[in-house]
Length: 332
Image (cartoon, rainbow, N blue to C red):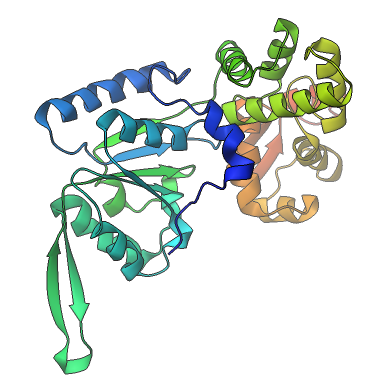
């Protein structure tokens, strides 16, 4: 078992801009309103918060929200990754070390091994674990009672969760892509905390290219800051922004090199599709999971790609983006 450890050097930047309360968390207004009520109710009855499932595309703030929940409740948080929990003993040792109402955060909860997931059923529902002690005929089951705790799971693929596990989450919260207006606010907040002199033009340019995700917006802010420092500029302005985006190969609507490769592969090699995910993965030399979890959701949401029963298909909007004719293809 390995916990997610925050390494000081690469993550100081992230820790400085990570929101510490719901009030500091920009966007996702309906989610925050619902979560605020649940948190207030838990604090009023001085009991554990119901188990929470945060789901949605990567980079929208699921980890930040888990930390905010712990902060709002005034409890300790233990952060884990689903694939790191290889055997039942891994989760059992953590759960038995929890304090009253502590919070356990499991990222990529859909990737929990079946044996580990089964241990969680009784722990989440009735706060106990049945542990097998000994071997063979001498083996016996020992029940360990756990302090009330809250499990917060995060997933980009809620459809992969088994029904028994999904049903044990009392609070399901969906995070959606951010509009440019809110992303502009995210960028300005981060720039202020990091003392980056950012022009309004550059902030808007970052927001329009951030694929609807704060994580990408902050990453682009870092790259623009780097270019400004190398160029000896004291202000990150529109000129610096355009130069940085050119170096990063990010186009005006936020599509990067692999986004464009996916769409152009569909258009040029497969006449727009449909084509199966496995074939597309091989054609662009990228893992299927990466395409499905990271790239496809945004391309679908923006209308450049659609998933049909026969496979992936480029839309008319994708053709128009690359100024390519439909070459006699039937209109989608």
